[in-house]
Image 1: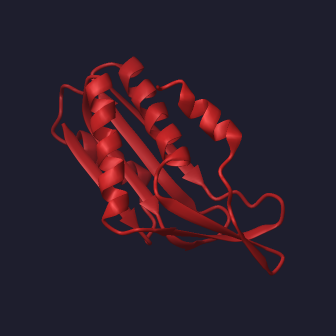
Image 2: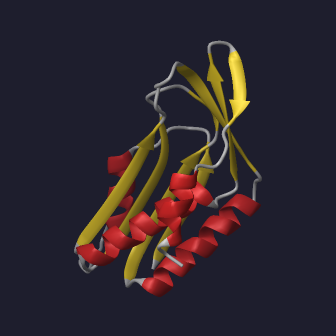
Image 3: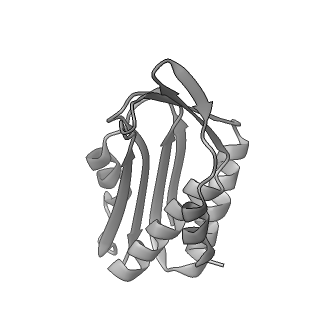
Length: 148
């Protein structure tokens, strides 16, 4: 299985990432992608994401390995941006390749639920000149419980 995990400040090209994931492969029958954007709702003017370099990549890799143990995957790409991002900016990409769509959909959802609830990122929101750290949401934790 090919795996690419990147924590980066610069933007990414979803189509280029899919092409890289599938290049030269004839065994892939499905690629499921999730691309998350910074929402500008409730007067959000910016979001700053921080992480612990090295630890974050290792933690994500462990969950990719768990997904590989649960589903027959052929490739996974996880890109998460850090730094100050404005509304509309791409923030995360999860792309999962498999021979069949069911495994790709399930693994992509599993990985996104993990990224929302357990990945070591810290988010600070800016609203009308005020900043605050984002707290965990019970709804995200509830979504992740189904994978236990």
